[in-house]
Image (cartoon, rainbow, N blue to C red; front, side, top):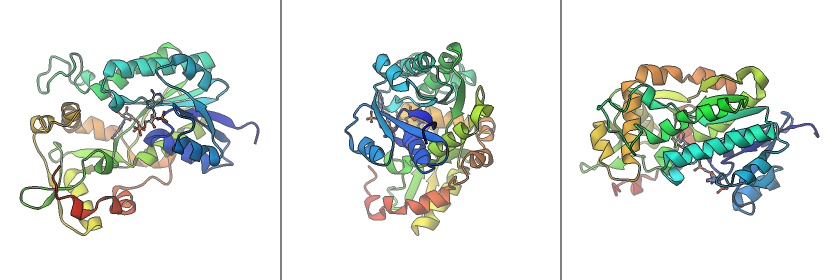
Length: 322
Ligand SMILES: NC(=O)c1ccc[n+]([C@@H]2O[C@H](COP(=O)([O-])OP(=O)(O)OC[C@H]3O[C@@H](n4cnc5c(N)ncnc54)[C@H](OP(=O)(O)O)[C@@H]3O)[C@@H](O)[C@H]2O)c1
């Protein structure tokens, strides 16, 4: 199909971009073709995508010229930044700026920018309910993305601003899964009290993005927000208990306790959860699973996702409390 619309996908070998590449490859008659952007064209994941029919092109966000080249001739691009690779909001904003400039230079017709809220619009730096981090931020990995929105509008890039949600995959890969406490009981722990945490299977973000591209111009210039389900900690713990067949409790801790957990980024995530807790009405209200399902009919519920991934939670390994 010679006139398929090429989507250049950043982060294609990762979670969000990977989901989009798979969605495009799984729909060969959908009218789109995937261009995998990677720093390592010979990498295992890139080569696997090449075997499945994707074009693979070298690009490094730190090298804006490589990005411009990689966008050339494409119809659209999926732009996602890599905060946890460096923990620097300034670097993240530089990444977003380079993406917007490359999109403009290539004359792209539709870009999806994977963004998040600039929480300082709800909690100004002067608000002491949570500490200011890295000098100028409340939730650095949110604020830098929200602040970066203007790079796309300033350049006049036809953009859909995609507000994502907490990946349930964090329970597997980010050390947030059920752990045994001193009482020997399994618990998931985060500082949300009884408030809802919008979550999504990371794979579904890319599938929703594909749904956005398929809508053509309809969502250009719009901000859309996605989640798979908005659940309280107690509801997630109940699903864990049912699917794993072993009781898992939800343990809410104060945000300041979470910020003090000591792992890299604990302060950023403590503030993030507090923002989601204190502004539940906005944050959860903004993210609609029904809308997300309209973009991606195979959107997973938490229980569906957990059931597919239950072997990633070997109960005998959860006792270390590490
Ligand atoms: N975890 C969550 O719950 C959550 C929720 C919402 C949003 N987010 C945001 O999601 C973003 C990360 O997305 P992700 O989870 O999809 O990433 P990921 O799975 O960690 O994958 C990142 C991919 O980006 C590529 N990459 C890294 N640095 C690059 C560079 N300099 N130039 C070009 N490519 C580069 C890498 O590909 P190569 O090695 O092939 O080059 C890698 O495969 C973060 O900014 C995070 O804040 C996370």
